[in-house]
Amino acid sequence: MCRFTLILFLLTLLTLLGGCQLLAPAAPPLAAPLHSEHHLEHLLTLTRGDKQLRLRCVLETGNGETRVVALNEAGLVLVQMRQNAQGLTVHRSALLPDTFPAKQVMADIQLIFWPVSAIQATLPTAWSLGVEGDSRTLYHNDQPVTQVHYQGSPWQTPSALNNLRYRYQLTLTPLSPDATP
Image (tube, rainbow, N blue to C red; front, top):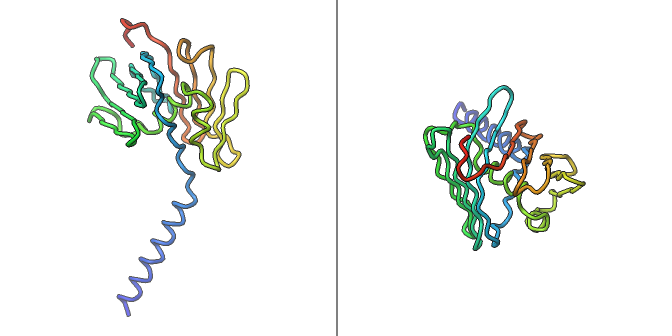
């Protein structure tokens, strides 16, 4: 009888946990890699509450591949992300805080830089993208998830992203090739 009760308890627990996962909001999808060639360096500042992480990021796109390399202030590589037709590959340094959401940051970078049409082409039914002036808002089930504000062309001027779901801000500031964070 005790074994039956334990099995019933575990099945109930698994059902509840599975239900919680079904209720959890879906992660934003990644857009397809760009075929146009770009190479730029930005200071990425990720702020959540009173914590801040500053990284020098190199973004390269072209030939259906996106590469992002992020370095700390000492020049050590903390994360390398590569996206192509096979998917996203992430290599993390042990020095990178566990709280750094690499896949989410890649989706944020795409939301900032990719053409609206490229993002909209990959959005599932529950997702939509609104554009108004120098701002973009990503929605999930008509609820705002992420907002982006531009000061001009995102490839040449600072951009600010506010992730409402995970409560962090990401700022990308262009760097000259010889600048240091």
